Image 1 (tube, one colour):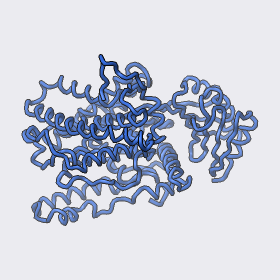
Image 2 (cartoon, chains in turn blue, cyan; image 1 turned 30 degrees about the horizontal axis):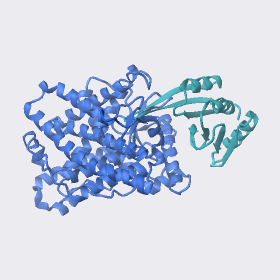
Image 3 (tube, helix red, strand yellow; image 1 turned 90 degrees about the horizontal axis):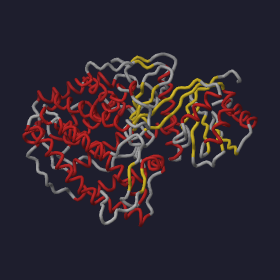
Image 4 (cartoon, chains in turn purple, green; image 1 turned 90 degrees about the vertical axis):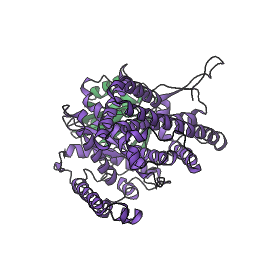
Amino acid sequence: MDEVQDQGSPLELPGSRVWTPEQREFVQTWQERAYRSLGESRGWGSDPLTAFRQLVPSDLPPEHFSSDPLQRQHGADSLSAEEWAEFDRGGRAIRNKYMSRPLPTPYEHPHLYRVMEMTFDAVIGASVFQGKPLDPLPLIATLPRGDVSAQILTEPETDVPIVFFEQGLFLYLQHFAILLSWALPPFSPEQFEESALARLPTRHTMPPQASGAFAGTLYGYVVSGSPIGERVPIQVFPGNQLLAAMVLTYMERFIMAHELSHVLSARSDPPPGSESDREQEFSADEAGADVAMDLAVEGLGSWVVGYWACDLALTAIDLLERALGLLAFGHFHLRFVSPTHPPGSERRARLRRRTASLAPQFSPQSLEAANHLLAMSDALLGRLWEFTAPALLFARSQRAATPSPLWNRRIERDYKAVPPPTSESKTVS
Amino acid sequence: MGEDLLKLDVSFEDEPKEDVLAALAGAGAKVKELNQKGMTGVEIVVAAVLAANALANLLLKFLPLWKCGIVVDTRGARVLTRKDCKLPRGSVLIVGKKGTEVKLQQPSEIELNSTIQALLGEKK
């Protein structure tokens, strides 16, 4: 990563994306600003390259795509020789397709960019996007500003939309998937079948680490911002790696599809802050869910886990919003007043109502499985929030914990304290 | 320096967009809105191309309009002008190409222009 790309000529990446010098300069400028700011906040000075080198690992080694580590970990006899060979063929194909491509800017995160490329390719290959040409094809990039979000910026000279995924979003979804692997019962490959999903227990005794890790993770994001470049403090629960990987993959696809649906509808979108702005978010969530469900049918044989992952992604957003509000204001009497975005809880409820309205299209077995998964995650995540909320309030009152300045703008824009409920009304926490 | 063009990004949070666009038009800038439509929020950034010697005039238009101070960061290929509520209203912090910082309070156009030209001219 030491070499800085020559900015003078178009960079053609195998596949279909061509970056013009203007686009590379534009993205690099945003990335430089973010790394400079990060470097200054961490005491490394204002050279963005210094911060980048401190925080970003080098590209994945070829061994990463080999089955050798898995064979050592799980035993060579856990799969047949033919299955391991198939695994290695898949790994080589991914390596050849994605790892041989040069990165578009010297500040691009090699791992996360590859994940974004794979996610992007999967999403635009979904049948939902067929017949809806994305022209011009958006470009993708990562930003390390610490926010948990993704956004689109249009490069001003070429009018090509750039989908920026914040590294904080990747991290937050990854941490959320890891926490789910602790909170939810272990899923075997067979349990991803619809008939088995509906039989999973709704009541599950979580290991004691789950609640502590959950509260600690939310607290960390709110008080310190996204832990860019830091080690993940908790690993996936042994035996639930498949669940964490599936949920993470489909959450990322949901968000990518949400963003691309904004690109598709950009010409008809009214300006930000207008009446129908919030409606556009609901529509983008629905489009994102359609893609995730479509890809889950293709990959897993059923839409259910794809849909569940969308619900979980919105739950993850809801939990962060709740934690931010609670630590900022110290109470539950808040209204979410963002002019453009409904709260995560409302988006999730809307998506559920929409899925329920489509029920006649689905088999009773798949609906039963979906409802079962939602009930299970609602129960377990609800319990975790019951544990987390008092811990956040305690930290605020006893340790004067406050949200990181990173969130100031969001808190100022999106939250309004309201009078406590009277005996005749009730505030939902 | 007078003929040089600057690529400029203007980030202004909750300040009225119309005022920003009018000020940019008044400074002779070629303007494009870059809505940051996001997963959890929208921020509006305006991209502009304007003559380097028009930047001081533009900032003088922003100063009385914005409720906080302004940072002008000239490092990188595009100059970033953003509202910064850590700075008092009416103040401008200019960061030169080499990172030199100059803070001005209620500057005159001559003072602002000479500072900008000096800091834009810094060799990286």
